[in-house]
Every structure is written in C-alpha cells, then in structure tokens.
Length: 289
Image (cartoon, rainbow, N blue to C red):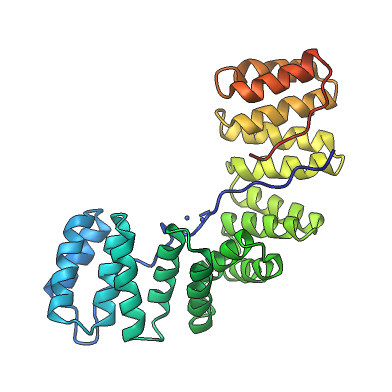
C-alpha cells in the first residue's frame, strides 16, 4: 500500500495559509497621515472595515499619489472580501512606489485569496527581495511554492522563515511538510516535533507526526501522537480514525472500538472504514485529511 501523502491546509499568515497574514494599515504617507487616514487605521484595527474603506477612500481622494494611503485602502477592501477592488488598489500602490515591500506582500495575499498562485508567488518573492528579513513574506512564499509543487523553493523560503522566527510553530509545521514532500522524512519529523514542542495543543501537527511515525514503522510513537491530537481537538475525526487504526495495528482493539463509537457522530465515512478493520479484517491505512 502506498504511504499516504501529507494533506495540508494552506497557512497563509493572517497561518498556518494565516490574507489574514496581511500587513495592517499604517498612517503617515509622503505628505503626512491626515485625519482620514488616522481614523481609517482606527476603524481597521477595531474591525470596522466598512468605515475604514470610507475613511481611506477620502484620504486617497485627497492624496491620489500617496502609495501608503492607496495600500491602506486596498487592505480595507481585502478585509471586506472585496478582492477585485483590493487588487486594483494594491497594484496601484506598487506602481506608485516600486520598492514598497509591504504593498507587494499585501498584493500577494489578495492574489492568493483569488486563487492566483503564480501571481501570489511573484508578489511574495518581490516582497522578500525588497525585505529579506520579512518572516511572514518568507513563510507565505514557501506556502505558495509548496502548493505549486516547487518543493526545493518551499524548503528554502520556509527555512528562512524559521530562522527569522524560530518560535513560530506554524512555520515549523509548514517546513516539515515541505521536507516531507521533498522526500526528507527525517527532517519532516524533526520539524513536526519542534512544532508540537512550541505549541503543545497543535492538533494537526500531532496528527501529521503520528502519520510520519506510522509509516516509519514506529506504531507505538504514532499511537501517542494520535492520542495527543485527539486530546487537543476531540472533534478531529481524522485523528480519531488514525488512533483507531494504530490501535488495531498494536492489537489494542479497545482503543479502536472507542474511536469507532466517537466517529459515528463525527464522520460516518471514517467510522465505516474503521468498522471494516474491526469486524472484517480489512487492511487500513492512516490519513492526514
């Protein structure tokens, strides 16, 4: 049976993929902030995005060539999910100020939300070129590279993100997935262990670590990781299924029965699969979905 691949959710920095990882508005453009830009920032940080758009739009009308004001308007549009208008504003911001790293980063986040991965990668790459110490941009470039199947580039960018922010659990997790997809399973386990050390309640990382242990033949370690994932998130159906599979592999049928009972109300498909292993001797494999 072919080992299951890691299946992961994009944790773009608001991640984990994570447009939540967009650069927040700042005040103070080329000609000073102005009352509208200051009030727009206050509205934005308070979650009043409609009011933020209105304030930033007034600021842009007063200073149409102020890249910072245009960037802020784009971020307010993005927060409302008005990605077309956000894209227009942010593209204008980077055309007004080509070396505006934050605007390139924000534009990458908006492209990502629109499913435009290649454009997002290019925008994040430009942000990184302009500001190599921008950990979020390095992280997001790595996430997009991973989604595009550019595993070596993903490892490179995510490694930089981890060096810049070594206590960032989600970045360690994404670096582990990049190593896994590159065929470096030992490195994947190393960074998954670091992710759960930094964030003990990180259910997805515990589950992924369990998958890695399971396929390396370390079934007892896998059982422990799956238990940790379930403790962190009792409604995590995939982790409960994996715990049941590991229990069967270790002849701990009571563990599998317990997870089957829980799965009946969480995920009928996984419950049926685990039932097959319990009562029909079906060969089962763990999942990271």
